[in-house]
Length: 361
Image 1 (tube, helix red, strand yellow):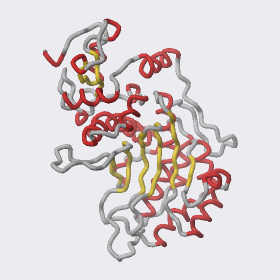
Image 2 (tube, rainbow, N blue to C red):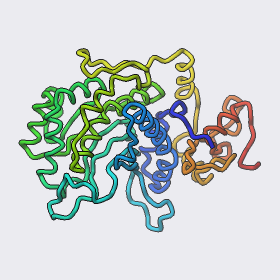
Image 3 (tube, one colour):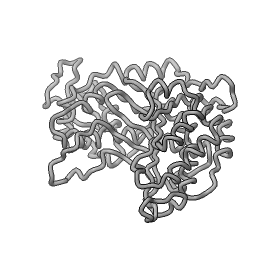
């Protein structure tokens, strides 16, 4: 089947309602796995494709792997007790003992590093995040190395943040301090205090359409040299930060405009939507009425999280929708028997001109 493209992806309040559900944690987790994560994977695949185009880098040949959450066995026998309030997909270092630039406090080889760059969906919207996690077993000397790199390149890093709209924070300091302290001084504070889990993020509020996704992907591309540098430092290699930054001057972003990290205004070129794109975006977010949150996921579970027309699932790269068999415009009711699970392609092919119950075909 043809995989969904970035133009097919939106996130709306109905997606957020799933995150807010508090009953039947297993159903909720499955729904996030089969409904939200596939859309995030399309966004990540598009981001990595543009990284390849911009920098000439095959990300997975540079010791990165995909990381996702929720990530559990759907056929588990024990009761699921985790209340997932997020869906995350991104890239992180591969799980191999190759991170010779870092040392563990217990002297064992470092096989896992917790630095990741990716996209996270929650009830508040969609975030691009660079986050260190599970780094407590590393020595202070190891954890200081990424901060020293950031401090040494603070002027360029600050420009990258200005262009990409990405912010930085650390819970060790007050939020207002995060906003007003210059980046180099902020890093100095972290080093002095021996706190190392510095977060970078950019958020988008719901509803989220094509222009928002392109904006976040552009920020992903611009920030990628920092992620790449941290991984190379962890491997004990020399970073190629300046080489990668120099390539940001080529045409690669969604707007096809050049990005120059030396521009004084620091403004990122925005993607200008055509009137046709605006109409499509409006229809995809506001014009399409969909199932209420509780019923929506029960329908998908009843249909085994597969398209009832062609049988594809999220594992096949499908984006699943809950469709009215009899459209609202023709008197269809918001009840279980009037819903069916369709993939994006079959849903478009059906349209509201058809009242076929594909579950009975």
